[in-house]
Length: 458
Image 1 (tube, one colour):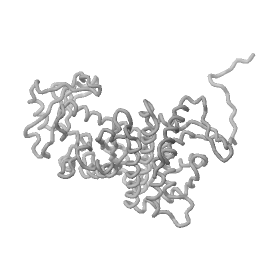
Image 2 (cartoon, helix red, strand yellow):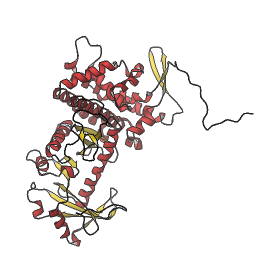
Image 3 (spheres, one colour):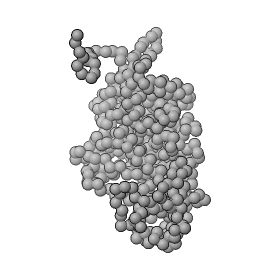
Image 4 (tube, one colour):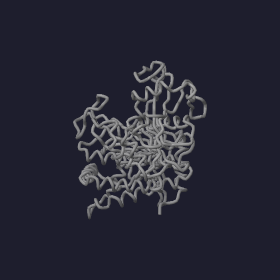
């Protein structure tokens, strides 16, 4: 009797299978595109770039690349995995056709970017209406987080430069709409910058905020219902003044650098003025207190700005800075929101850390590097990445429930998109049968049922 050697069974593999569909779970993204009306919107936006006798629609080509990125691709050539499954993804252009379109769109510069962004904004408004109570503005407010991203370049690309972290590449500034604790987030701004671009450049923060506001429904483009959050890179006089400008009236929660003047004011705060910080569940945060600074430390800043400082015992192993005091780590931020306890303001600002999750998701979705050489081409690539991230945010928002709504791109790909299926043709219908033994087949079928029940775009 022979004993089996090894921990895994031996499987004989052969090529030539015709009815097996890989990435079958990608139908979730395809159905999201259809129900959101993204296909028709992008196609209409890119009509000026379609040649008279072209076989492939420019909008379809761009969406195919975005779908490939959403499924895990990180270059234009990865659209081949869609081309291999025409029953699911339709007719997909060749690699040379895709490259030529990207060059054509890049040559048009700002005109192309405006067309794509306008289409995305139109679809976003529609998707938020479809989502109803699950939409990020269900509570009547919208929160936009601005943050910089370092993208490493491993070859000499246009405008690649040494970064402040002593790496080499680019330093785009991005904006994300926060979906809150029950969801993820979606991109609304991506400003491509050289690697040596400053972190606290006010003009770049203003440009990124303008791009983000243009993506929101019109009623959120000004007024207190829109909150702009940044880290200390946004704590400049010009940017805060722009946010608070008369007629714009945006709410803001902006990190501030601990200057010597702020440090001296903190030392003068009496013990009775410190309030215990709180956690998201309402419990007191152990070893952390907040207080509001007033007086001449606010001179030169917009009227109505409030300066709130937090002191906290440093975590084990953390090193204190010169601006820290009495063995406590100090952080500071500015806001113009009134009539709420300052501990709630501090918690709201601390939740800006969710932007780091959005950046991690972006890195896993085409932003690990910029694959093209010229800056104009990579600006188109950034728009493609944002479309892919939109789909990865909209699909869970419209179709998934419970903890599955919180799944990041890597987990969505592993559990849902990589599921295999069998294509069956019966009569005039094509049916995609998913593996019954796959642990998350129920999630896929339930999500497809949810998407099917949504109305078709008008």
